[in-house]
Length: 107
Image (cartoon, one colour):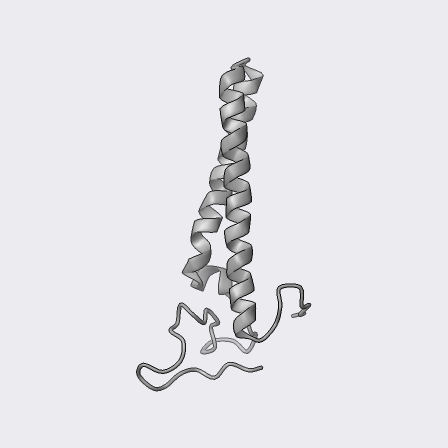
């Protein structure tokens, strides 16, 4: 299914609904990670989870067991939450194309 850009006012999905960059490429999802701002909270949570992992390892290395446990919990919650948000948005974008999350596509 090929997406045709909307030329009428008030019709079809907004640019944030359809994150493809049809003006500059023929690939269906090129640049989607940058143009689709709905992915950004997931990316920020993944980055926070990685930072929490580093802080947890430092805390555990210095013997701060309480901080290591707290950091572990924060790390796990951030990584799982971020990955979930990114996958849900990916599923939404693929559903707009009439595909499922597990459909393979090659570039």
